Amino acid sequence: MSVDNMAQQSFLPLTWSDAMYLAPEWILIAFMIVLVVLDLALPRRSGRKVIGWLTLAGLLTSLGFVIGQVLDMNAGTEWPIRLLGDSYRIDAFGSLLKILFLSATALIVLMSIGTVKREDIPDKGEFYYLLLPAVTGAMMMASSGDMITLYVGLELLSITTYVLVGIRKHSVKSAEGAFKYVVTGGISSALLLFGMSYLYGLTGATNLGAIKDALLVQGAAGDIQELLYVSFFLMLAGFGIKIGAAPFHFWAPDVYQGAPTPITAFLAIVSKAAALAVLFRITFNVVFPLSNATDMYLSQDIFLTILVLAAAAMIVGTTSALRQRNAKRLMALSGVANAGYLLVPIGVSFKGLHMQNVGEFMFYLAAYILMNVGAFAVISVVSKATGHEELKGFAGLYYRAPWTAAAMIVFVLSLAGLPVTGGFFGKLFILLGAAQSQAYWIVAIMVVSSVISYYFYFGIIRQMFMRGGGDEAEVDMPATTGVVVWLCAVLTVALGIVPGPVIGWVNEHFSIIRDLFIMSP
Image 1 (tube, one colour):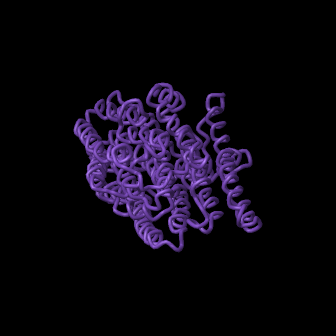
Image 2: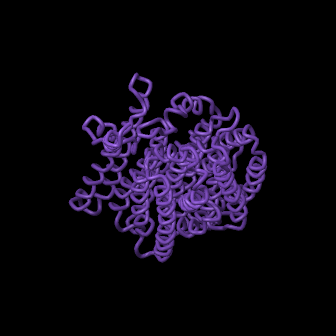
Image 3: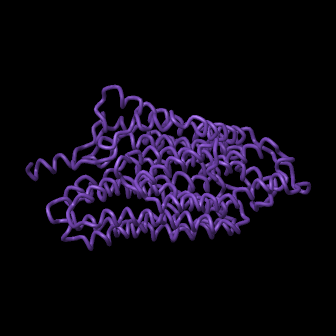
């Protein structure tokens, strides 16, 4: 193919028919613009709740379009849809992640409608409509097939969450958390951009498929192997910060504690999952193909490094949480450990007969979303009733609010990975996949870290049942928050009872070659 033809293929314009495939993203941006105007026009007292409900409507509308795209994938349409020279892809991998992102954000918004008050967050309108560009950035990251596109999505997600973390302008902890988040987020972005610039300089391409082809040229990868190590390790460090995996996790407890509880939930779920999605695409599109190259140890070293990062996250997260007494800081360290579990399907690669990495990742991510949103919803109502976020606020919760305590038990059991919950089967699928790939040492660490986590997870149950709560105020559960709590609890149990149909549906709609591997444009 001539240079002119390659250029024409790489820089195809976006047609109106192509733009229709971007309807989920357009809808969110359109809703944000409308809500900005409404925030200026509506009265302050009633307008904020209206904006909250309209934000939820925008998220559900976008979710409906994404689900429609997934259903169309088996209707004869040629998939994946490759837009702008394959820099943006509409495929099963990205679409399934978008469903999870939008569902999680919708639950967070519904939870916040009942719990976030004006005295907590003065600018509730901004609080709601800034979530829309944030989740749009996460969706762009999930669908990106080009380093430029994914970096734009990353910055869109990052900048909006910087604002959301510090939106409680009169709170010292919020200001401290926002400052730390901006500094560490800037360092992460710099590391990622530096690593990507090395990769672009070595290959002359930003598209992941074109980068893979350039590195597979006879002798090319071997000649520049040292610089590739620098590039990938810089990017791993940057993603480690975004994911909150040890040893890059020190920002997480302070930021989670300082941010409003719904934003803490968003950081723990959507922001973390979006970074993991990008890491999934880069490793399996650029690193994995190098495993068959002669005299190339880069691929196995990168996957080993990811497993070491996962092991460090599990060990550090669980051990650091043992003496934690603040509920949100405890959830931050729990998120560090869970980042390790979610890294394992990436690190074990495709070996032998083990090819279900994406299904394992998606299933545990779905369980992780449900148990975390539910737990944060309970924390929000308990902290509102007690006036603080310490674990002692759960003292006697069973006697003050038995149904809320029962729901919290479900979330704690799922976080601990015990049976009849989605968290149990999520960890089990990942553990069996690692064992099938003969990564027995990471299996041992998963088991040990899970056992250690029982101590602090069951500390919450001990507070609810074995500590007196006579001096604590009654827990008022708003209707919208109650819907979120029980929806998450029921679905968490459902995933633990019938996990097969869920992971089977993912594997049915997903094809490794079609939806994960990116060919050069």
